[in-house]
View 1 (cartoon, rainbow, N blue to C red):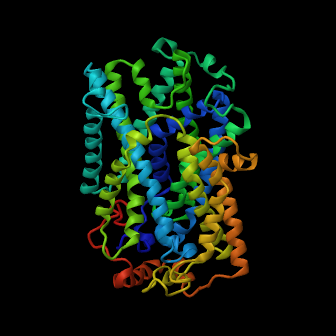
View 2: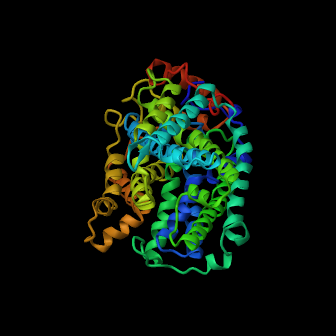
View 3: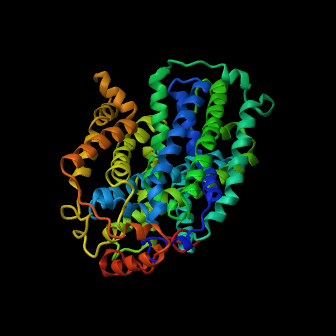
Length: 522
């Protein structure tokens, strides 16, 4: 079975509980802790921050389930699904955009893992000097940090080389570890006897207007909801990569709705409590989980460092390596191999200089999350409006897998759908001024653009959807229903064989690669 060929229903082993386990392992992650801590930096109180997370996680769960539908119905991954709206060649832009964001997230997670491993080892060995040993680029990078980053990246590459076909079993192991780890942090944060703070004192904090915050209130809440949805937005786009492993829509929808909202609230809630406890003890809120190490005994720091690395590893394998590797493979499927695309993702993540990009919490939620949220939001709006409204959930596998990129209904103009391009640019154009102004330190900006910037994913998604539907109404795209019914029934297995034969002519031909834990049946 080729990496991006349709997956027959008899090769789809994931049920709803597999998705729940996967999300538990993903959500119980240091990045969720960081997002929760960042909300306090916005000026929100712990209670208001929890309400913000609840609203954002509910939106994220519904949006992810919606865009997963095509993956289940047709057994196709994201790079192929995007061909319907962007065109066979234009889909490469959508895939590459998601791939670049995935690499950036991988870069962030690698650096958090590096920080955790180094801090945990330095604390356990009572050798704090290791943190600043051999300064290479002060204050961003030391020799110890560089060696730890290389070690962490090498371990990720080793996992890719070994194959990850049994990844679902890995999530069952790490999910309870992550839950236990987050539970212990919550206990520490709310028990003064353990060195934390009083829960009543933490929850008694009100919205603040501290320097550098968003001043609390609806402005901060809107930015927080947008940051959480943006954090999930890359997974929303490429979730067809994993949804194609579900035999029914019920399995994927139930798995998404049980696996995202409540676990997300609990995980971010731990970050909120931990950050609030540190703020009470030091007078300043913190967004990094590793900042807790200064209050823990040495053995707990070592265990915490290993736990953070393990939790980041499971997220990277599922969300930040596999999908970008698929996206890069789609650029030139006849020549590239999946494993080398995965190796490249890890190497590029290191070359992004995460030690510089993520040196501080400044702009983590607004600039980083909100910044790429306007791009992923626009692409999401185009894909969902095309599949559910323009095409009525009807796709043709023969058009999704043409012998040549300009053939079939999705060939459009030289493989590019101009409607999708115009709609995506229109969606990005509204939040872009506020993002650029924030990046350049410009404060004088009309209130309308500020609101668009705070709600970048929502604004981009809505604007792109409306523009795309208007463009399709003015100039209807080609339609093809030749094998729709055949694609939806039990004959999908034989249809995928036909598609694989078509791919061997040049569209997809990757004999060495493995989407080990998905296409190979895990």
